[in-house]
Image (cartoon, rainbow, N blue to C red; front, side, top):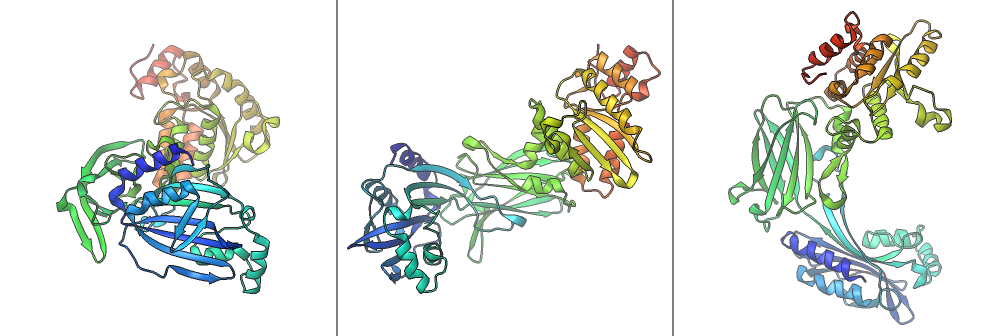
Length: 490
């Protein structure tokens, strides 16, 4: 196996060494001649004390399932067994693979499936594993399955291995020797009037000073950051209830705060050990809350990134949008989340049927309104207005009983709009929705109001420079920018 994988594992293990107390090893062996061959070995680092269990949980049919608990100090003995291809688990000596294994990998993974955010044993973890290939390379799986069928295991070796060691092997499941190292640190929170009570679940062997909880508090959306700070725990924060040890802290919550994010770090190591989104004041949950709960650790372990982070990034509300296709996808998503029926023409009908000027169709059936939407990340809107206007006129002539409007989405500021684009927009009556309007719509979507779609369709239908039609172009252009607090004009 590669020295690089081992060195990465060793470095990470040393960083978190106080998290674990023992190792639980689960192994499945099959007999080939007079020799035991390991079909799968999984070692899990545990945090709650050494346990004594029967060494051999199954021994028949030339199959043997073994569970053994070892001291955490035996971790490097396991690594050496991986390296050598010769193992000894629960008194059973066997081989892994043919000859000395030489393929391995190291990875850092995280399980983000904690729904409801109640404390559950789902943690980030890192792994060191050795892929050994199909079972048939080492033993006759067909013969094993025939025997298992006669004993009632209709799923063959896969069903048997799951029942005996908790992991599948056989068929499409290749054999491997793996070491899984969960990080047993979990953050939770409870809102109480005026503050947020934070709880970090951990074992007693964890030093409070090794735990840092960073928090960020938001207003209506995560783009509206109100406060950022961190809590460094001390022994006075330690508490225990029944068999659960935990650290407890408090965060004062200003009245304008509606949500927040807690990110837990162990000894300033990245990626974080856990991350949690919280909602404050009993805010009604919206679809954005769901997006804010689902995510993953970014590559390189920089931070925990949610689907909501990705949406706001592509919309350009927190930083400059640089990808036109992703911006279009984000606008489509935003309109869909707002409760409108939205159709992305490029994605639905394919690039072979692009319509000049129109990217998205949005419908509000209860008020019989339709919006033709064009998306751009550029500041020159004139090239978008003419083809969009042609499509708008064609639709208006055929949609009797419907109010049809057009809108251009561009994730830029008013100071970035050229005078020519502004003049063309006035003449056309097309709504122009820039970064402030996109942020406003995102806030409405996050508010989970029953009339969200109605309010947003009003913005799409009416928001633009049309009220400035009576002034000359330059004067109107100046006034338009000043009305939105932007004094840097031509």
